[in-house]
Image (cartoon, rainbow, N blue to C red; front, top):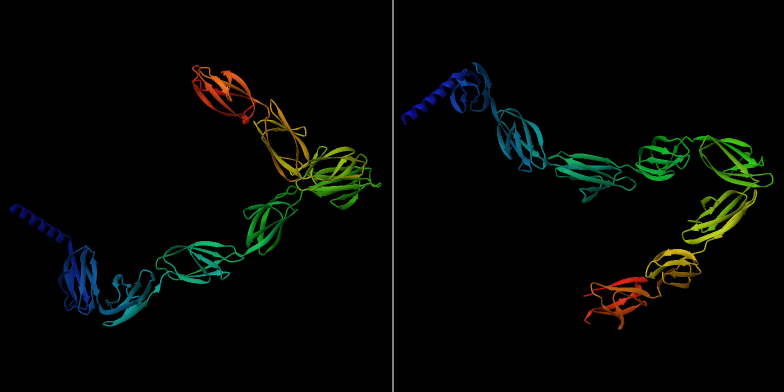
Length: 565
């Protein structure tokens, strides 16, 4: 025990020695004099009538100077060598602070106080911040006089106030996808992220997100909605494929766009590609110009001197040459004797020769009723109707095809330099379906093969037809009357008998059909189509199987397996 006490005494003396080893001399000069001096909250003395005191102190010690009627002064002594420090105490004063709302917090010169509060401070300038969660903090400087009291009331404004205006005014505002308002509009928003969506008639909609900081000051937000304009984008030459405003279309095309500048690229079959910008300021028509490709066209005829009309406009007599933009053209030549030649050509090269032979060719005008979805075949040409064609002299078969009408054929004679016409009226069709039992029967209509059953949705001319259904062992023939725009379904059953081969394994069985003994398996039996009963017996005469056969849908030859046990 004595040894332990000796050790502790040694440690205590050691620390005292070490502390004194690092101590240094500090001289304080205070105003006013006779002030109390504390080191690490321990009184070390009082300055004399001259305001001076000298004592030993370690570096890092906390030194405080106090005097009655003065505000304490505290500092940390950091020097490791003897030093002199002048301390001028300030006379005390008081600040009284309250607020609306009353439970706010004040920060005075970095120290926090719950309000309302009377705070003792040194006379002079003091930075004051009053704050409360959910309200806009207020900051000011308060000047206090010696031994005086300053009263200050703070009225805090609720935080998160937002004033929202738009161009145009009176837009509809959807706030946080829940509440709808009309601008101009003001509200208080909690701190965090909020979504705003605006819409107004004649303007594009606008959506955005705003962030409201905690205890934010009032925020003014203004949003410009872009006016929607109806514009027609055309091209010269017309028909160009234009890519603009993230869409591709064929000019002319009417679009609804926001006011602004749009980049475009344009392509046209017979022109050079073009790029540029369109400044859309108001509704109306805007034209994209492309530079057309040009070629030389030479018009000649037999006989010469024919009047030439190009796309309906008279351009002169053969022989005639002129430069034209690339494209499609219709040309008509009329000779002195009244003979006519008509043709179409595509200019897509530097030089194009157009020859009109009014001696060895003529014109034909083809039309049909209805013309919608109708195409025509004449010679080696397929075209839609109405059609005007030029052809060599001769007789041609003209075929009309329309998915809603039967195929129709006519013949036309093309005479030198003359105009022939073919005008037909297509007849309505009817639709029929054909089923057979068994399936796979061959079907023919008026001697024309239609395929094998089932036949679905065949369209034929509305009239009386001869329908033939043929199986391997027989056929059915029937006259059918089909009315216009009607749908018919025909079902046929093979009228002939069915050959059924009965087999069993491993033992032969005695077979009865419709109660009549037929013999032992394996055995082939011809049965009429319909229902038949059967029984099978083993060698001992015991019945091993029985049932009903419906041969209506059987193939003409089939197999039937019996258990044989």
